[in-house]
Length: 549
Image (cartoon, rainbow, N blue to C red; front, side, top):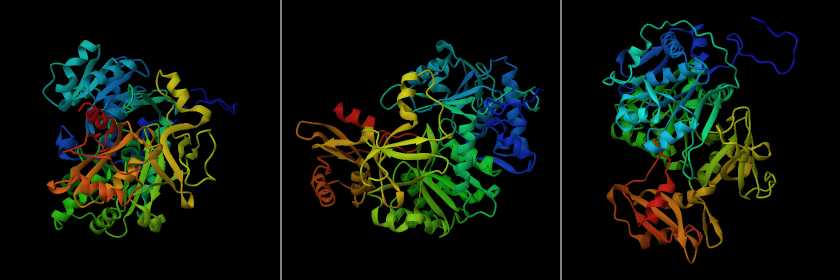
């Protein structure tokens, strides 16, 4: 080994003793607390009950076996390996092993249509795949004709097409792979939701993941004596979602425990948090937080959430009533905060409710407070002409970011990358305003803002007002073409407990609280909304359905 002791610039730290590598996160903890629990999953999130709870030493040995199995296939460095998997310890170990072997994980959203999945995988030249048995019927038989070879089937019953997890690691040692890796190397590509075009392949470096995980655990470990005491639980998809940085890598990088479930069902969340004495929870969307509250209120003596000291949520504001209820079931010391980020920059804005409690109680949920940027992320709001709006509170503009904890570009999409990073800042596509105490408010996604009667309408604000009505469980507001208004504010409603919605009465209720141009012009009652697996409403699908009527 030749060590550069001459140069101060253009150095490359890619040796195991000084590199930044996602694949090393678990291994490094083994030098201090090898017998501490690293990964825990619910019973439906593992193929072997013996792997439902793994220490750092056990997890690292399995990671190394998978990594050595991959290297035995004689794959080139940076080979893209598709993953079509739900949350499980096996899938997570495999994902880290891909990074440790110097290759690139390409996990895809299991909810996407098969044709879209195959198109995205072709874009990143993925020629091999790891498939969750539960998802095999959707995609498995289409991989071969697309030129993608399954190399592992996580589950049982498909040994005819690919070895299972245990078969794959059989015969491979647990020694540490000796691979040159640098922090700027890409270890993962994640695909955007593709709501307006083909999903973009977001390039995630080792450095991005490391720095983001550290930034989140500083917040998530609040209220604990030691940061390594953290036991974080998440029930939304982590294998193919950027939420893994805050929900799995954050506790692991602190030497704590990551707890995973497969679905954010209220009683499953409550039972798991009770059993594992969870200290930090990703609530997901407010609707998932409310489902947890209902579960505990239904069986108040069955669950104990008093160990939770921090809960983060996203995608929409949480009502003060839901906050009060959550504190009743967890205890007064729990810290609750909203996060606002995206795949390209998930270090996030964070709104610590207790820090701005009067503001929150006065304005939520009509205003969506997203708080202040993480200290490792420079962030401001730009006007139409690129002017900084810090001195113009209340004027809407685009949130822009710059940070080492950000994406490295869109794979093989130079035009989109240059547009996203124009002027040396990442352009988020989110409309923000500066508010009191430098707090930012999210007005809306630009693509979701309704342009009605010459005015911009925040769908977030209209939805918050409608959801104050006692007969409304949930609302989703979109703009539909209209001769008079340009776009007519259209509200889709899920009734509460089967209530009958009186359209005229609900519109009158909204008109008392909103400007005329903000008031819905049409009410549509539906049974459910199309959503991401995290609970975020897919408004483009609502617009498509309404347009097809």
